[in-house]
Length: 172
Image (tube, rainbow, N blue to C red; front, side):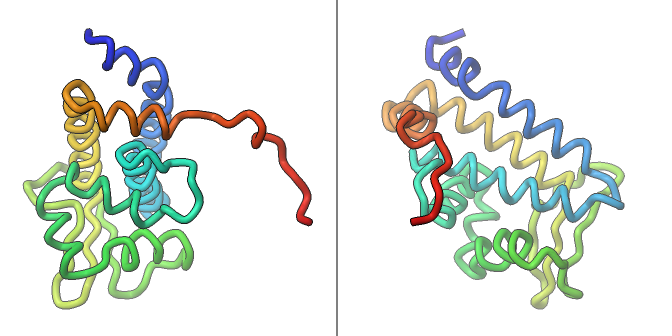
C-alpha cells in the first residue's frame, strides 16, 4: 500500500465505510428517498475532497459538480443539459418531497444504465446504479490520489481542522 493510500485510508476510510453502510441500509423501497438523499449529499462531500473546499461555506454546488466526472461521462453530459445540482441534489435536500415526475428506483439487480437519467423532463434516479457509479468514482479518486499532487493537497486542505473554530458560538 502506498503512503498516499495509507493517508487516505487512515484519515477518511472510516468515514467512507460510514457512508457505504448508510447507503446500503437505506437501499430499500420504503427508504429509497433517504438513500437518494445520502447519495446526492455524499457526492457533494467527495467533491469537497476533490476541490479542497469540503468545510468552506458557499461551495456546495462547486463540490457536487467536481465529483461528477468521477461518476462517469454520462453525469457530466447530463449536467451540461440539466443542472443536476439544482434539479437533483437541491430538490432532494431542500424540498424533502419527491416531485410527481421524480422516480426513485431500487432495482433488484444492477443494470448497465446510469444512476440518473432525465427522459422527457422526468427524473429517473436508479439507486443501485448510482451507488455502483459512486463506489467506482471513489476508486477513480483514490487512483488519482496516488498520482496527483493537487488531489493530495486538496484532500489535506479539505480534512484540515481549525481548532479555533470548533466551538459553537451564539449569534451576534
